[in-house]
Image (cartoon, rainbow over all chains, first blue to last red; front, side, top):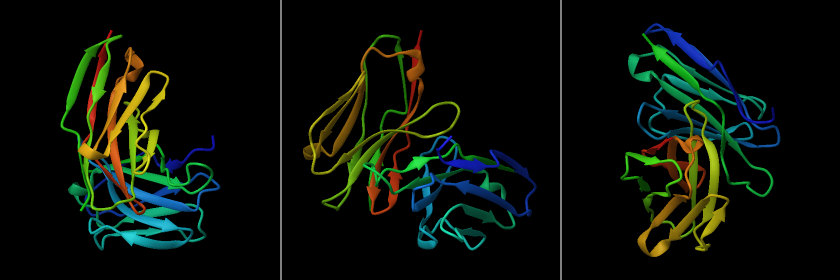
Length: 115
Length: 112
């Protein structure tokens, strides 16, 4: 499978706990994106990396959220002190190669439930 | 700010009927991309098409076709001879540099 992969697929946690999600992009892609999708809504942009550099962050990304892409390959998204409002699907996408260089290809997502 | 409007929240059609999903967008950019994605019940967003703002030619891919009209800021998607496997939520999106702005989606149900 050469698509975008995300782990875990589901995460249930208690309010106040920290959680970390991982995204592995398509191997030749140098750009990686995180989005959040709540029920009945379209995905909302959170942040974007080109190689290891984090180039843009949405105001949705509060100081409890941090994203890294240490070697320009996989990325992690950490949420500290989770709140019930953080419950959502967290989607990762990558882009940057071939004919469709500006097309973002999405992974299956990590569904977070905060109790 | 960019905005994408998908006014149709839910559509149901009987199998083999044609169906059109509407998308209207707002942007101040002169260069931009428009996209359609499909989200089946499994949850993964599947890329369907990308259209450059300078290319207003309509596109057909099998049973799918897209109508891009800059004059009305619309990028509509038509499925011909719908099938049950087309049941999903469909999202229209607009690119702003590296960020995609999505509409709220249209849930399409094909009734066998």
